[in-house]
Length: 111
Length: 115
Image (cartoon, rainbow over all chains, first blue to last red; front, top):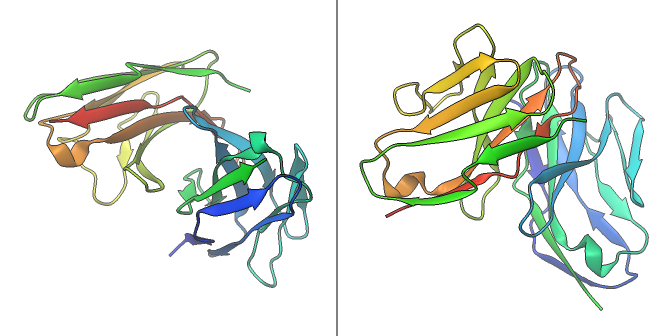
């Protein structure tokens, strides 16, 4: 079935460090891929998305590239800030509009 | 984008009682969804609620336990019935258009604790 496997956390980085959160997926057909972020005490927000192979989604300095050959959608940011501390969820829509979420990765950035 | 509000934001309930959670969208949307986020875990889809039709439930969720209403294009309710401590979770609603890759916008969630 359709699923998302996400890098286990928690992840702790110093400010200005490089961030990678791995995400791989299993799906039939050509899913759309998403990264959502949940800041402390807040609801889920869309961070970025990609709808077809080789698309790159980007927002707020975060990027992820839809890699069909490796079935991956890794999240990256070149220089993290304390304000990036949150839980990050990788997700996919395989066909209908049902979102399948990964388990989430908690990121803590320390000054 | 759509702005979604939920009521209540949190509640503490006794075992055996029921709670109805309301979800209001600031614009008309075709599809609304209800998710559960158990402590320390990811989101799991409970059901899809489309206006004018019965909700579609995911495996492991049944209408008797989680009845859903969708009376119009901006509003939905989820009831958690005959609650037990295992129902303690955050319940989130989301809304989307009809496009396959349409972004789902999420409400802030309702944090439910069952004693």
